[in-house]
Image 1 (cartoon, rainbow, N blue to C red):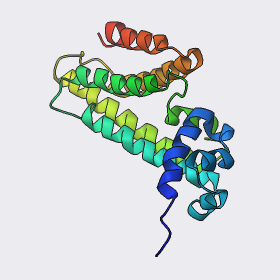
Image 2: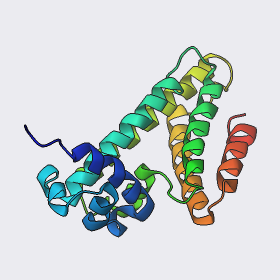
Image 3: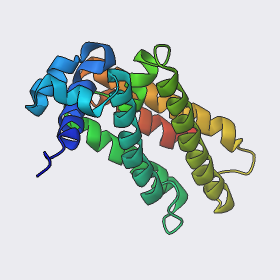
Image 4: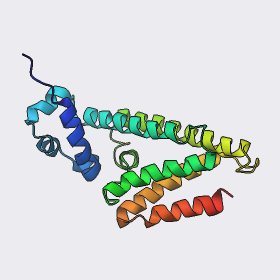
Length: 193
């Protein structure tokens, strides 16, 4: 009888280690210890720590993309309501770790991009998908009359996504939801008027 694969267990437990400690801070030893498996199991399933972290990023983005489909690209909801729901889902995720871990996409953008071309390329792809989804939502808001026709949806989407990542980073540093609350308040009370 073949041995059961420990790959999923390593990925699941390793995700928490990498999210909490960062790419550089998380060691393979910590990852396998969290998974409760021998260190050789890691190398049986992953070519390198880089390959492991790329797989984590791909899986994390699958979850993010699912949330994008439920919110930003959900034509059954009012456009600005979709945007707010998208922020709320992400803020709720961050709240689970008391704002200590941040977002894997943002963390890897700051930490790994220059060290791994594969992760860098995946981040470029992720940012493009997120940007296009925010653009899609903003264009729907223009069509529905929630936003003026003079708005440059592409530029505004870049600003919103970059600002949101900045607020997430600040919330991580402060270990507080206040930067995210300020971000949402300003976006909806000032920027999207």
